[in-house]
Length: 78
Image 1 (cartoon, rainbow, N blue to C red):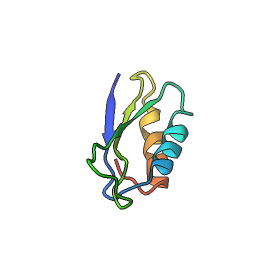
Image 2 (cartoon, rainbow, N blue to C red):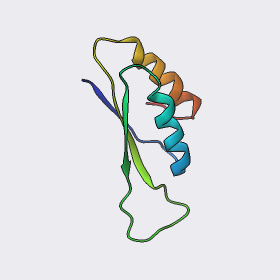
Image 3 (cartoon, one colour):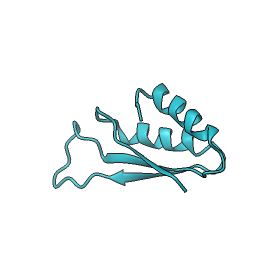
């Protein structure tokens, strides 16, 4: 199973990451894991998530294009 790790160039809120995760997981066979940030102290300006770990099946090559379209909708380029 190919894996794609996406790290945005700008901080996103936890709610936006979860929305992206839910949106991507609507595609057949897609699994998305969020990597939590490990900050010592909470800061509203820092994201609570470091990156999106997207796992998709090899037998469906069109998912890569669909995944990119969803990420671009949120302003993320992978």
